[in-house]
Image (cartoon, rainbow, N blue to C red; front, side):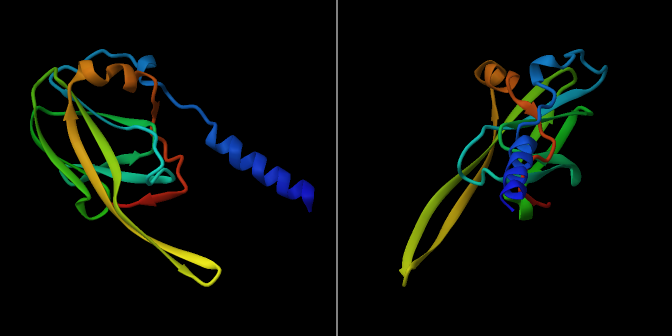
Length: 159
C-alpha cells in the first residue's frame, strides 16, 4: 500500500513537471497580413490549480494555465477577447497588421471569510478577474520564460 501511495505521488509530481514550448524558443516570424495575440498568466496562489478557457470573437482558442501563455494569429481589425466562464475577464483589441498585442490575465481575492464550525472551518471568498493589455517592453522578459499553456491544471473553467 505504501508503495502504491509513493508511486501515485511521484506520478502526480512528474505530471506537473512537464515542459512545453518556451515563448523565447518560438520562431518569431510574422505571418503576412496577420497580427499576433499573446495572452499570459503569471503563476500565483489564487486559482493556481485552475485553467481558464480563452475565446476570441466567441471562438475558443485554448486554455490558460498558471505561468503559461497562448499565442494566436488573427486578422487585423476589432476583436473581443474573453477569458474564463461567464465572461469573467473581457477586453477588446483593434489589431493592426504585423502588430503583437500582449494581454495579462490576473486573478485576485477581493474578500475572504472564515468561520469555525466545530473542529472544521469553512471559508468563502470573492474573486476578481482582470484582462489588461500591457506594453511589449514591460513584459517580454516575463513571457519569454513561460511555457505554452497545455492544460496542466487540476480544474478547468469552460467558456
